[in-house]
Length: 225
Image (tube, rainbow, N blue to C red; front, side, top):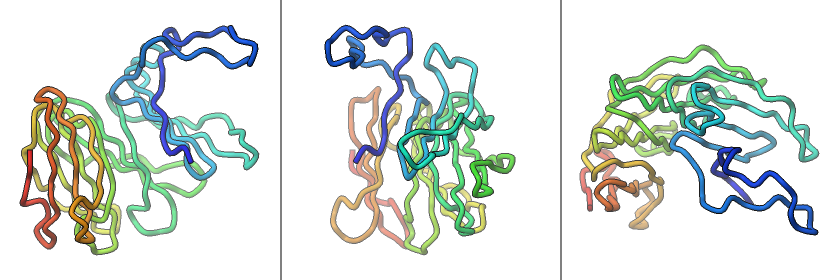
């Protein structure tokens, strides 16, 4: 099952149909930009419009509601901040999906929470401070309390911010952990098979991978670079 697709800038993609199979050719080289995110989930597509040339300045999140037959309705556009990347989860436990958007601004770095109405529309965003240039965000239950938490990769500060969810649409004061230079991607997974989600972080400028082991009730005190 496809769970995510990276977006390609239209002018770099081959537009014509050049083969007998009537399938457009792929671009000659991978083209993606920090902030571009396509997620194919349960009957909906979530798109973060950010730094691809066709989208520059858009700074929005688009929600495409599914018709149940493989097609989608016209996009609903939600305003975000600079170069957004997004994740969806039920942060206030009302049974409706909400959005968290990492806003890749140097100062101040923030993540925005948009609580969902359950119909594809969202409330106005609430901002939570992190560190410089948040570039990637993941959701998991890091402290095992049944409430979704956030981990944010701050590319310009070389840190990870972990925000424990309170279950009501709010988050505790971020915990900050140093990793390598320019963390730009990460995944929450149980690395050491102890039943707790750990973090694996790719650091672009230092060419390293950092592993943050979850030591709940004091998560991520052990960091392996």
